[in-house]
Amino acid sequence: PVDIWVTDQAGNQDYCRTYILLQDNGGQAGGVCKDTTLTTANINGKLYTEDKEGVEFATVELKGVGQAAIPSFKTGSDGNFAFSNIQLTGPVSIKALRDDNPMNGLSTLDLVLLQKHLLGTEKLKSPYKMIAADINNSQDISVVDLVELRKLILGLYDQIPGNTSWKFIPKSYSFTDVQNPWGYPTEEQLDKMQETEVRDFVGVKIGDLNSSAVPHSLIGTEVRGNDIGLTLETEDRVVRKGEEVSVTFRSPNFRGISGWQGTLHTGGLQYLGVRQAGKLDLTEEHIGRRWAGEGMLTMSWHHHTGLDLDEETPLFTLVFRAGVDGRLSEMLRFGSQHTIAESYEGKGELGGLSLHFVAADGNAVASRSELYQNYPNPFDQRTVIGINLAKEGKGVLRILDITGRTLRSFEREWSKGYQEVWLDRREIGATGVLHYRFESEFFTASRKMMIVD
Image (cartoon, rainbow, N blue to C red; front, side):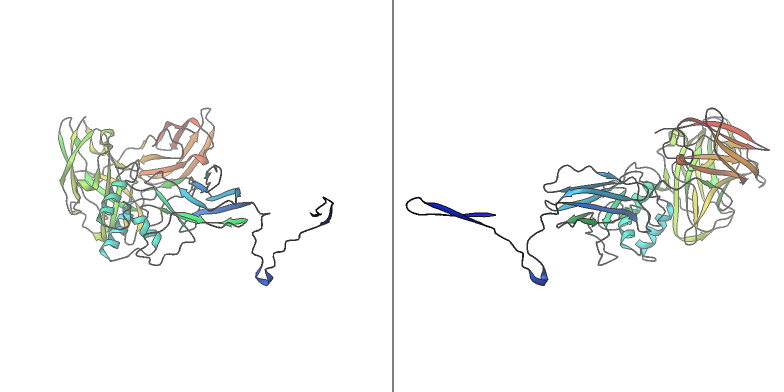
């Protein structure tokens, strides 16, 4: 409504009342004025891997001009995120971050794939795998990345130098050249927001070239046996305290092997170095000494093609000094405490890694059964329980609370030798001090473990 007044020279006044009507006469093309009734927007999306698996434990941040402080969003196992009531006051940017557990998904098989790419025999086929191979974040793939990746696999880094464990790239971004993906964005920019915006990101685990990274915690418990895979073999003997001991490794089944890795437990033996590189050309670069003081060496060896070696061929020789009297068969074993024990054949077929002992006459030495302390302990997500059995047979591993109530059990036919149970805390549903117990007709043992929040 508008009042229109008229006044003459004598001061007489009067008015009439009318109105002004504004019309946005844009015709079929629509109006030219912004709809001021829409003042907020909702933004949601998903973080997922190239294989469409949701990425958990990531922090999604939203920032913009004129925006009040917006709390970040922590993704769950589905990888979804959502922001509501975002002011339409200017452009905003969305960015996702995750920088934990750099070893997640990294293995010697990734070294094999990276070397094949560098040699040109088998190129990486997606821009996301190219980004994953750029370990040192140099916008290039080189031998330096190969060296850095090996150090990560050996557990010599707690974080990736100059890089983050994960990178997230807007799904809307199109790569023009698979083999030259550099210059990619790591955040999504929204200049003009609609009432509802959906923006997804592709998560790339740095160093993971075979898509083995675990993006979320819904992975369950896994039992790893040694019935398939590479067997390393050495002669058993008695050692005396202070004695220098050379241990030569061979293999009865080194057929088409392109790589292997693991954590060598050296209880009672001080590692001195590589005596002979052997047919594998294994050097100190393939061995991590970070936990040598705790009686563990991390090891990783690979070749860009699978090798076939005779069972009499010396693969490599390591030298130790005995800190106590004992037998090698009771002092050395492979496990997964820091670098996971596994081997690879042909195009990457996954197998286990085990260590067998033979007597001087070539006959196999009977190992003793043992239930090992879980690692890590205490733990908050996953832990590994190692079991060595003198013979195969039916048995059960039970997880018990302090009252003796069974929380989880694994009953199966167990293979002879060393094997592992990868235990997920979500399947236990308890915290604090627990017990685990292995029972069979030929062997029974128990130990304690602790789950922390």
